View 1: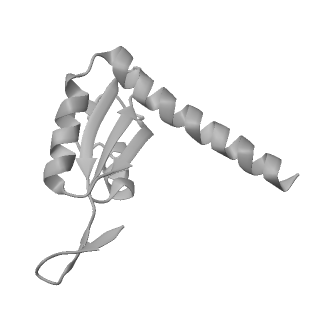
View 2 (view 1 turned 30 degrees about the vertical axis):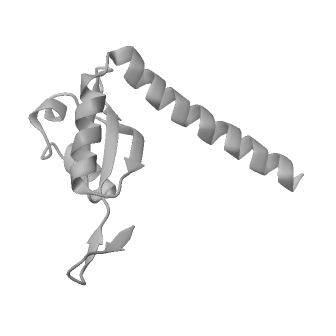
Length: 108
């Protein structure tokens, strides 16, 4: 998603994301282009942490309005205990699954 900035240029909206690494650990980051950033992680060029824990999978992401807010949200999530991060990931997955079920029921 793009937003119109005060100088009249189109700028991408930032995202906060959580990756699950091959060893089961969780990595939280921010990006303006999640697909490109995920490709960088997969290629081992994004961070030292994920480079030695490949492959990684995108488990959660959220769009935020500003880069500042994205950094704040990343910091907040990184301070959470693992169980709370798993709740974030699980709650999102559960909501997506129940939404898909409702959509299928509507077509029947």
